[in-house]
Length: 419
Image (tube, rainbow, N blue to C red; front, side, top):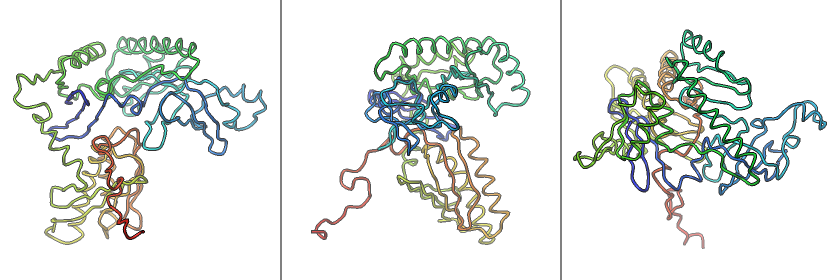
């Protein structure tokens, strides 16, 4: 992991070997837009029964939205107000009511942030879910490890709060889990005390800096190291890692620009890979290509054979090209952080076994992506429809702005013909 800091932005690159697989940008002015995970006291502005949603003022430029399914309530309280059956949102919330809520999705474009009332505080090994009976262990862990962790949790879990054990807890000792949980409980006590005093929209908890957040979520023993080119951030990250996993602290390194002839991103060839990741065309190893087109509604990816003419027959050429494309599409979705609805137009294959194999390879490649995805089988039109959870803006949006000449349409209309 490479962390490059300058006054206008901090960039974080995650490399697998020499290949760039993830990239994050954080700017000082992102405080009002990069708010995923922040906890607020918000004021309900209005409740829309027809949308089963409420708009909530959390102190950001746009009101956030809270859907009925994300509202937490005591069923007894609702019934006592004559609710009966499925409680409706207008029974649960009223205008000007103050509520504690957490952002689950950043505001994007004209859409405000999305909220939930089921607050959670992520630590290194566990996630604390206050005032909840939630109790779970990551499904990515082996059965034996889940059994071991469950035995520890049964002894240390607080009665009034829920706990979710993260994948990072693999091999963690009881002392490490207790230390992580104690830190989160102290943090929640502080948040709760501030919330009781608040009488206007207030930020109760801000997620840490992007670099610390990514390291908390990602950094484990499978990483060779984290290289940071800012001394202050290096000290902060090293202290954080030393406090939670001391054995990894020596893997946090400082890149000193005075001693190195190349900048951090040039040394690891990150800049040239970013240039390619911003192109709409991606070349495949055998000469085929992908065309990636993003719209507000969805992203379309077209697979072409291009210069790949194969050796034996058309079906084999197309099959091999589609296998390469499946691997590369999964990598590009992760690198460009493309979310929402995605449609992939693989080249038509006659043999069903080949189609099934391409989908299998695609799903396996997506399994390495920690962001939730859902993939459907190839349709009769030869299209693969899928979704990838959208949390923030993608790579292209974070490194570009809308063209002032065409307003992002890519064409300039000849107004003289409209007079």
